[in-house]
Amino acid sequence: MSTVMIQPTGISPADVLAVARGTAKVVLDPAAVETMVASRSIVDGIEAAGRPVYGVSTGFGALANTFVAPERRAELQHALIRSHAAGVGTPMPREVVRAMMLLRVRSLALGRSGVRPLVAEALVDLLNHQVTPWVPEHGSLGASGDLAPLAHCALVLLGEGWVLGPAGERIPAAEALRRVGLTPVGLAAKEGLALINGTDGMLGMLLLAIHDARHLFTMADVTAALAIEAMLGSERPFLPELHAIRPHPGQAASAANIHRLLQDSRVMDSHRDDLAHAVQDAYSMRCAPQVAGAARDTLDFAETVAGRELLSVVDNPVVLPDGRVESTGNFHGAPLGFAADYLAIAAAEVGAIAERRVDRLLDVARNRDLPAFLSPDAGVNSGLMIAQYTAAGIVAENRRLAAPASVDSLPTSGMQEDHVSMGWAATKKLRAVLDNLTSVLAVELLAAVRGLQLRAPLVPSPAGRAAVEALGAIAGEPGPDVFLAPVMEAARTVLAGPELRAAIEREVGPLA
Image (cartoon, rainbow, N blue to C red):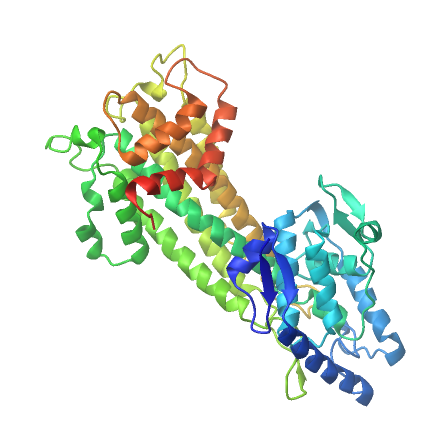
């Protein structure tokens, strides 16, 4: 088991993945504890002086001008958590909630929130004891951050609300804490607000999506190369000198991948010198690196935004080292919402061009002498005909999901929060687009492998051989129709996992 140390300077994307999807133990650096103690002393001083400060001695949102008496300020913080835990819908995946909790600890440890260390330590205890709050999917506008989702997390610290059980069932938080020997926490002034004001849910989902997209965009180059090989396409459009004259880095990386993947292929050798063959391939083949490469550059932009957010103080109000407590708008999720929407558009297009190659592979008029729908006995058998329908339906859904969420704002809190980011919705639907992209690429992988099998006795490229070996064990040899859904599910697992890429890279070297 690895350890993630929460320092006053923040954490890395790898740390988030290790906790969200792994079993890494979380530890607070003593320096972070000292930073929180210093920040808390400023809040205690404000309380003692009786100065009016938002969230410490006042209500919230449209109630910011409502004074709260000292003896009711702890009650204020608990009431805030209960009222803001107002989400509805199915629970968010465990990995998203764990990422969100870790990022909230990170935010508190930066020492600008004015909370006692024990509050951060209580969140760490939940993570280390595998206690995952039940966080409904609907409730956040990405306005004052992810208020409702974070409130559902904070409510568990109070011994209230719900926790995800091992099988996804809903368990009362008090019972879940008792099972692992944890006790509820009582909040002091400012602490309830500090637990829920920030972009942690959006950022967690964006970081997970970036990691997934990085793998999928590389595998999109793999499936494109296999499909091009199966269709007797040309490797010449992927020559490095052709991409040096249009210096988009993602395009160059994608073209280099495809060109390398097409080498040492008897299938490619069979038509390489035929001047009458494949003078110009269709756009879905020839322009693969232009589309996938643009998606890679979009991914780099999203990664830059997420990296900046990992360094950011996103609480409100913030406690400055000189003793001031200032209101900010740093909780607004516009940077993350824009990045997620942009990446969703790019990922949707990677799937769209892949589906066009699948359609071409199956069409007897365009697939260069392969049988219709890649069935050796088309007519009685339909081959992969309906697999392409499925891919087309998913592409259509991704086009709907690619409509940006971040341009849609509804005012809330009595017009106090009159422009919201919808960043939670943007990052949530980005994850859906990437999940769909996985399925589309799996269909292309399956179709390309079937096409290469049908080119026998010509021997495919090393990448093609690795793919045929991996998928052959699932799909078998070309022949009569079989129950296709399990085959497609298995192909999806192969594409999403690391093994096929690793097998290909052992043959051709590392892929970008």
